[in-house]
Image (cartoon, rainbow, N blue to C red; front, side, top):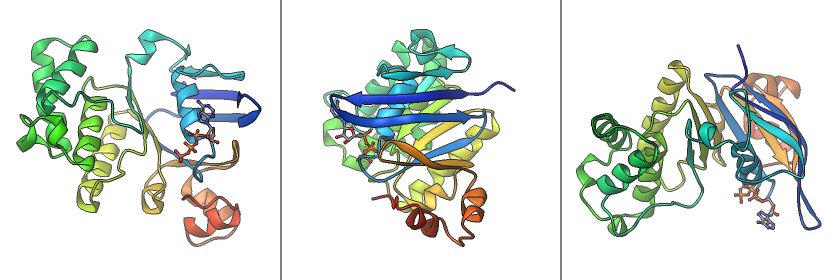
Length: 240
Ligand SMILES: Nc1ncnc2c1ncn2[C@@H]1O[C@H](COP(=O)(O)OP(=O)(O)OP(=O)(O)O)[C@@H](O)[C@H]1O
């Protein structure tokens, strides 16, 4: 089967700062791929390159066989950035309707999907509340629902569960696993160790380089560690 994402020899500099150095990552369809690394290691920059939002100094990003940037490919991706891109004056429902409309969904398809996605993030009872009255965690959850609304093949989530309580986090991860069973691919950055354990594949970034990548078991095996925490300590890249 073709790769969902193929990043080849990506390097990126901001001025004199080498933020990504020869990063190559292949992500198979239907997996949850975790991108880990300390703050400033380049995770968000790599995600922007993957999406084609940022042109790398060197290397290329291919998503589902299409070289990025590609607007049509971008429509098949659900993206949740680190900061919420919501309209505070609108209600949750209106925000969802807006995001559904820009993805080109029909009204009836949008109606069903909006209901499902708001349920997934437990916001049904707040659907008619203005977003400027939402807590930080509620905004995060709404951003996630917005990323899911057009039922994308690939979901790219930059720290999706920050500010979300452990019980809801658990149910969101259950939803992620359900989505991968439908063949969807999820790429997630996280600082949370127990979330990293739930990923099918991981890459650990440090100072712009991939230090190690593979399954959780592979990573543990590589240094005969019992926990992922030991792996991160070993490679000197404890997520912050
Ligand atoms: N637009 C920019 N201009 C200049 N430097 C930047 C820019 N964006 C990011 N950087 C720098 O690039 C480095 C990597 O940043 P990036 O946001 O990719 O890290 P990260 O691993 O996602 O961090 P965090 O976990 O804190 O979100 C940092 O040193 C950051 O200051």
